[in-house]
Amino acid sequence: MKILKHVRREFSGYNILESGKRLLDRKPLQCSLYVTDHCNLDCAYCTEYDNSRPHPTLDDLKKWVRKIRELGTMRIALVGGEPLTHPNIVELVRYCRELGFATSLTTNGFLLTRKLVVQLEDAGLQVMQISVDRMTPSSITKKSFKTILPKLDYFRHSKISLHITGVICADTLPEAQAVLETGLSRGIPTEVRLVHADPLHRFRVDRGRREELERFIDSMIERKRRGEKIHTSEAILNYQRSLLRGEYVEWTCMAGYKLFFVSAQGKFWICSMVHTDKHIMDVTLDDLYANYHKKSCQEGCGVYCAVSASLLVEKPVRVLGQEIIARAKRLPSMLHPSSSPRINNPTSSGVTNPDGTHKMNGSTNSGPSADDCVTLREGT
Ligand SMILES: C[S@@+](CC[C@H](N)C(=O)[O-])C[C@H]1O[C@@H](n2cnc3c(N)ncnc32)[C@H](O)[C@@H]1O
Ligand code: SF4
Ligand code: SF4
Image 1 (cartoon, rainbow, N blue to C red):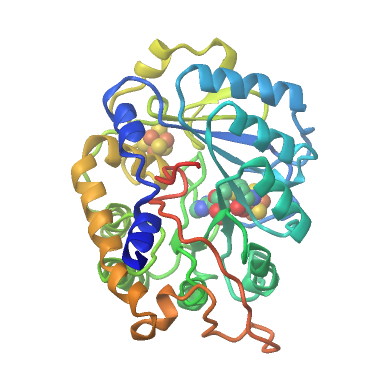
Image 2 (image 1 turned 135 degrees about the vertical axis):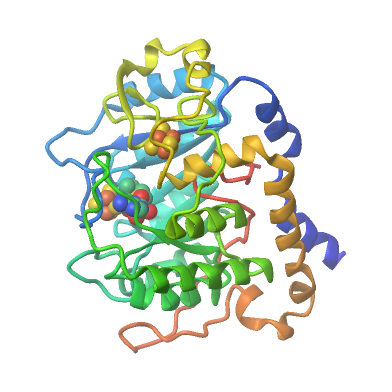
C-alpha cells in the first residue's frame, strides 16, 4: 500500500492521455498570461514589469482566458509582473479552474500570507512557483530565502504543489548552491537557471564566470540523474550546458504554436521575448500553426519554458523517459526515508535560516513537474 501511495504521488501528474493528445494534435499545450505588468520589486535582470501600466480588469482577463481555452489550451501559467499585486487574482484562478485549465502561478512570494495561500488553494490553484535567487537580498535581487523561508510553512498542509526557481548570474552564483540545498533539503523541487538576455539580446547583469557556471550546471545534472528533486528536465539542464559551451543544439521552437504568451494588454506574444501587435481575441488555430517553424532567434534562446515545451513535443519519449527514470530513483528512499533524509522528507530542516535565528518547517506536496512552463502535473 505504502509503495503504491508513493508511486501514485510521484507519477500522478503524468496525465498521459491528455498530454498525449496535445502532443499529437495541432492545439496548444500551454499559455503564459501576464496578469499584470505591475511589480513590487525591481530585479536588475528583469524586463518584464512596468509600473506605469494599470492592471487589466477582471472582465478583460476573463474574456482573454475564455478565448485561450477555446483555442484548446490545456494549461495556463499566471505570470507578470507580480501576479499577486492584481486585486482579483483569486477570482481569476477560480475562473481558470472552472474553465478546466491546469493552473499555475509564478510569484516572488513577497505578498504571500497564510490567508492568501488558503484562498488560492480553495480557488483550485494547483502549482505555485516561488522565485528565490539568493539566501539574503542584494542590490541585484531581493528575492531571497530571508523573506521566503518563514512563508514556506503556509504550504505545510496545502494541496498546492510548490516549487522554487532561482536565477543564476554573477551576483547570485556564490549563493546558488545554498539556494538549491535549502529548497531540496525541505523536499521542495528546486532549480536555479542561467539568466537570459532581454528582447534586444542584452544581458542586463553580469552573467558570471563560464567555468563556474558550467560546474554548477554539471552538478545539477548529476543530482538530477541520482533522482534528486531538481525541478527541471535533464534535457533543459543539458541545453543550458550547451549554451555555456557555445554548442549547437538541434531543436525547433514551438513558441507561438504549442505554447504562447498573452500580454497584460491582451496582445498575442510568441514568447516573452518576441511580441506581436495582434490581439488574442483575433488569433485562430491557423495563426498558431503558422508559427510552427524554426525561428531566427533560436540560437542562444533563454526562454527555457519554450525550449522545454519544444523538446517535449519533438522528443516526448526521450524527455519523459528520462524524467520517469529520475523519479523512479526516488521511490526506494521514500520508502526508507532514513537512508536519504534530506531529500525526501518534506519536513526535514537541514539548513539554518540566513539570519541564523531558527530552522524553517515548510513542507510541500511533491507533485511532479518538469518545468515551470510545461508542468506535467494535472489538476485533481
Ligand atoms: C518575470 S517573473 C514574473 C513572476 C514574479 N514576479 C517572479 O519574479 O516570480 C517570472 C520568472 O522570470 C524570471 N526572470 C525574470 N527575468 C529573467 C532573466 N533575465 N533571466 C532569467 N530569468 C528571469 C524571474 O526570476 C521569475 O522566476
Ligand atoms: S519580481 Fe518578477 S516581475 Fe518583478 S522585477 Fe523581479 S523578476 Fe521581474
Ligand atoms: S527561439 Fe526563443 S526567443 Fe525565439 S521565439 Fe522561440 S522561445 Fe522566443
